[in-house]
Image (cartoon, rainbow, N blue to C red; front, side, top):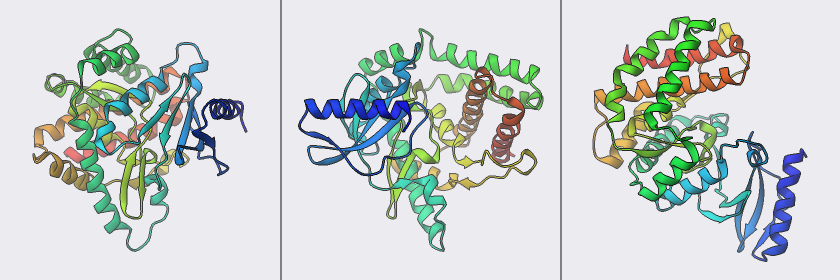
Amino acid sequence: MDSYLKLAYEAGRKFASDNSLFSISNEKPLSQGNKNRVIRGYYNNKPVILKFYTDLLKPNSFKRKSTESLFLRHAAASGVVPELVFESDNFILIEEITGYSLEQKFSQFNLNFNNWLSRTAINIGSAHACLANLLVSQEIFSNFDNLCSYGKTLEQNINDILETSLIICKEVEGFHDLLNTIDYIYKYLGEILNQPRIIYKYDNNLGNTIVNNRGFQRFIDFEECYEGTKAIYLGAVFDCLHQIPWNQPADKLTIRQSLPWEYIKQGYELYTKEPISSSLLEQIIAMAMFNAWFRIKRTWKANLDMSFWSPRFCKRLETYWDMIA
């Protein structure tokens, strides 16, 4: 048990001693995140997850707990996120969703998998449409501005990322040929920024989608949510459709798992009762490229080995060009 998990248990035991409605479960803990630790428990006899945030112990923290709890309150009536049960200074309690991640489900492939996946992807598309079309109150926007923007506008934050991306293209080996993706983003950026503002979930990887044998259950992990637009959110979704194993050699990279876009799109359109137009699709792909550059910038800023990461990001970006070829 690492030191952060010990702190999570200490916080849970203290909360249990102060609140008779809560108890810690004896079941095996769930898999742990990079910036949080989670333990199982019960609140008012219902299974819950205690999520303890490790970044709160560090200077200049992103305020992941406040961001997640704010988004869960914002989306509480949607039916596609867990219920926020309780919030403390350094942890939250959320309902435990029965099932497993979509990433785990891909490892259980069988003859009925494709039929299950198409049905589930339609429901996931509708769930994304629900979040993309939530009305955002001024109170929510002002709180998100305080948490996430560091005093900058959406336009300034996007331009900061793109300017850094241009530097990476010029200075980092393996990224020189990706300048055309930044040009493509700029081509559509004006139209995208003219769309109504929403709060969107940045990290939509398959591990953050909970499913069971019946299909989609809930999205989880809202530590990183930002101000954006519909196209920015759907681009972030699109960016996570394809999963590339990080342990493959650079010359043998393949797409391991894919969530079929045609069914995501179908589910989205069923919910909104409006088609995703060809122009909106181009904007979505531009924002998928932007989401990938957001990841590249963070990798570069963290001084990680870019020679390892560049072929993996390039492979991801190739899939977007295939969509508009």
